[in-house]
Amino acid sequence: MKKAVLTLVFLSVCFMSFAQSQPKVGDVLEVKAPKGEHYNHIDFPRLNILVKRGKLASYKPVINTIVLIDDVVAKENKTYVVLKKKDGTKFFGLQTTVEADYQKALDSGELTKVNP
View 1: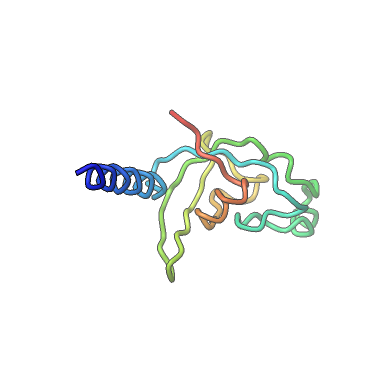
View 2 (view 1 turned 90 degrees about the vertical axis):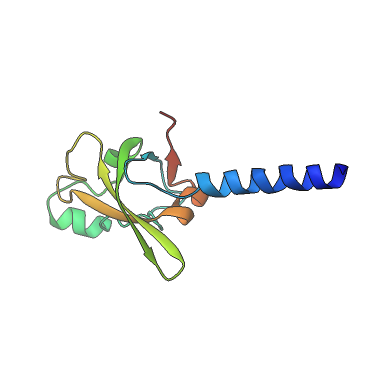
């Protein structure tokens, strides 16, 4: 009996943790600094493109930015999310939305969940 109860508790905890990791439209996230020079899992423009457009070659304007999930796209066992800024402005004054690999961006620390 004890094993059955423990198994049931373990399965319910696993189910709850899996359900929380699925993104929903309207979830609030925060963009953090990349581990290296570039963002690997968020599709921001490359630095040379920013320079060509007359912007500073830096990702500092997007660090600690609050973003909303605008759309969720499932492709080949991966979940991609379309992000837009919460305040409605454009990223770097160029793009209104960017795409990110949801799970990899969370695992690498490029995105973090914001508790409401």
